[in-house]
Length: 519
Image 1: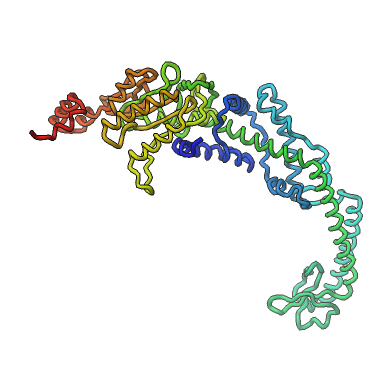
Image 2: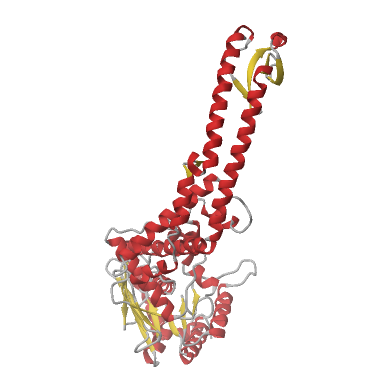
């Protein structure tokens, strides 16, 4: 789809709302890369699975989607030779547990949501890997029972630490009078005593560190050097054994790398799918019928960014006519109608449920071409009309039977007579090509053309002349008025000017140029 089309129809705003419902990094990536599809069968499948997911949510059965917390780094490191840490394995174990819960959940709802369940066919429980991680690691630490050798080393280490601490307590009692404080410290992995600097010669040992003030020296008494050495050796043995355990677990993960990656990928799909379903719930979205022949039949449709603040739209095109000309006063809802039809089409082709009544139909288009807003480029100093013409040229270059064309305020920005003539010629060409076209205009000549031409139909936005307020309802089959004279009169325009305006209008716009001339 043309980026300009997506921008003009607020497609990115829909994606921003979807992002609020995605909980994993992969789900968010899928939302950010979402684009309208053009294959009818694929769109049908995506819509149906989104509807099934929405029904599960409506029953209060939200899927237990893993958050993938910590998994992104693991995915990046798989196959790199990196040895995963205890924290990594906690994340992996939690992910595998969540995958098991998700698989069970989906398979228990396979009958109600067969399309949603089908993604579990490519997922794996990996119970052996999960069990081995949980046997070895808990709360971010390797358990004593992870291996017999580790248990033996840690028992020896505990005994060595106890002997060392006992000896240190005895030494601390002996040197209490020369200690800066009655506290055993550690420096560089060695237990030390904080000795007042002026008394350091009273303690037989080595100075390992000094306080910032220089008043305290941290000394390792000679009497504990051997015990410290034994403990350090056991710590190295422990670290070596822990690395051996982590290496073994990493090897198991690598052996299951493909299955693990597939699980992560499927979780991203599920996160994206249920994000669409949650958004569908938020906007009151429904599944729509799909037409491959340009037929659109929207009932009680609303723009998703306005919701209940918008009067429901009834819109139809593609059967008796495939070009619709919408007229009516300014701020009456004409532009909103175009944007609603365009955005709901983009949403459906993205597999999103749309805010419209059950039974609504949307066509599948390979392209949607829009000219909404003045499209003016300050950089190129283009006039409004020039911008319109450039848009029209781009539309005409690619318009065909699979194109939806939405044009706002056709024939504006130039001489009315020439603008109308050019607009009619463009409409005729789009009709010849079989495009599905909806335009808004104020010009009677375009309304009159649509009245007589095959394949065209008029529509108007309803307006209450008594209150001068738009009703925002589209009525197909009738041409609208701008109500310029009535609005001007009710706002206090002098009666003489109103009367003269009516006389000029009745004479026809083609004679306006003669009124200012003198004989």
